[in-house]
Image (cartoon, rainbow, N blue to C red; front, side, top):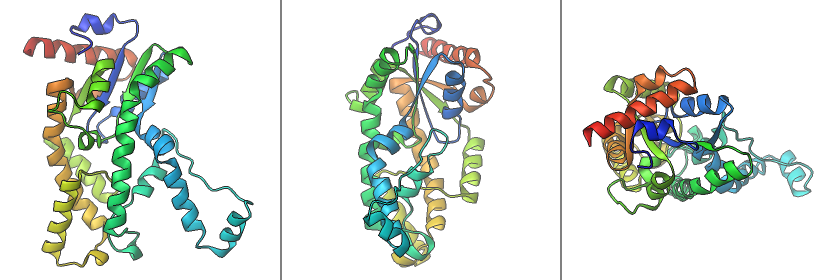
Length: 290
């Protein structure tokens, strides 16, 4: 790790940290606290994915939908209108909407072949965005004058890296330049996330083998034809399975590449000083247990 002791972290002129874990446990909450202090540069992996690497795909999909409306199609062909996503740190819906969910097209689902293609695009984009972290550390300092840097990763980071590979390119880029901090949730947190997701399912990024096994199991158990699958019903099942499946991968990332904090600790942070103290305590625990 780039900080061996709590004092190394708290005394650093240019502290740099990466938060990772399941979506909904507070990664962006912590990043915003640091950013709002006015001293930290906030690098959002999901925002980078949606703008630099998936932006053209997202916009092309929007145009494809618009071309199905004769009125809009005519204006698009004559370059009379512009259609593009308005993705922001606070609104990543254009990215998740593009990813979509597999299932019945009449219910907003995608054919599995197309869904898999979009998943593959997202995986490549996420890896590239993670690899861009060192560049943005330099950019934050050289252009904007920020020495303090926080990387806010997406919940699917554990799907695109191998935590047991000491040469994993994305993890190497993060660990060589930032302190990696896992936000660990309890069983109660996991159930809360599942309940929240069930009320409003959203697109997710999955590893290919996990997606294949979940899809086949769903079809076998329900006896549903692929083109008749309720996208939200499948999403609920896959998400619940992913919560359990991702936990050991996150744990391996923390064990091999960084430190961990609890979701309760994160929820108690109110300002940048709290976040810095929380991370220092995590480094202290790690040093004690090493």
